[in-house]
Image (tube, rainbow, N blue to C red; front, side, top):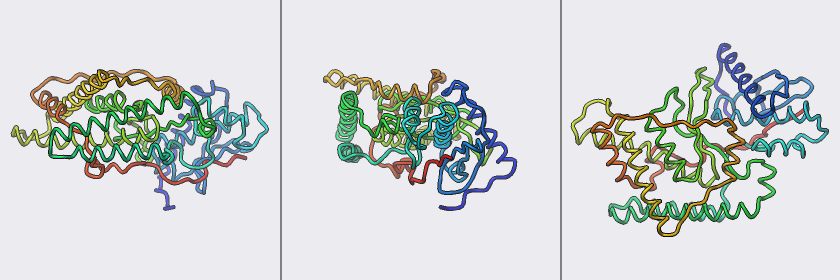
Length: 375
């Protein structure tokens, strides 16, 4: 592994303090304040996290903390806190990943695996791989210069995705696998997309609503800490199955890049200089695309394709984020640019161009070092 980026003494102090603040939050939220604060440390080695019972310390691998998304860091921290809870509160005499530990992870929706980065979806099984291949082929057809053919292919891809999720929900309701029981996540994962910012625009919030409403994931704005800058912000987290995260991640990248291209085209056509109206145009574009998908969903329902709720995904969200508060999208002044954006959004067609549209390259997390060691 490459050497981890270096931290100044000031940033290191801020980072350790932030990790302790996160520990305090999780201790209250998930463990009802049952544990006493441990010593928080960063270290190097072939591990991601380690709970030391005798020394009462939690050590996180520094390279992981600095290079992985903050949500992954927090999952490793919660994993080590589960070890701390089992050892100090339950006083269970068992191996590090014994039955008591797995029960705690299942209750909290944590990944109980002993290795690998949390949140990373496993490779799809053959059925999921076939669906992804078929959707990819349909999205490739959606790039056709024939407008009717492109629209039909995009609708077919969305219909296939809907049918796949209905089948998967029914299958999960009938049987829950031993592997999911051990991991404690029910087969669901998480991923953050987009930039970390102190304030997100209305168009970004509408984009989150598009993913949440039409692409079988649940979205939430989560606090993110940037260790190398010593600053905090928020980013959009997606929760769902591996297949749905793949597709929702692509759609997010496509709409961000496609929106920027549409804005540049609108500027050129209208003779606009500067970007004063950019946010309003993008808000209109996302709203127009949202409306388009609403119409297509209504048509699917008329054809007998009724979407069903995924209760297991909702439970995963409830355990992962037990204190969720709803946020309404901000209002936008309906200028000519906003109206032009709505019209452009209604004309947008999803197509397969992952590298071109935002550089989306599939799964964001790779590698499988040991999760933790416990003493």
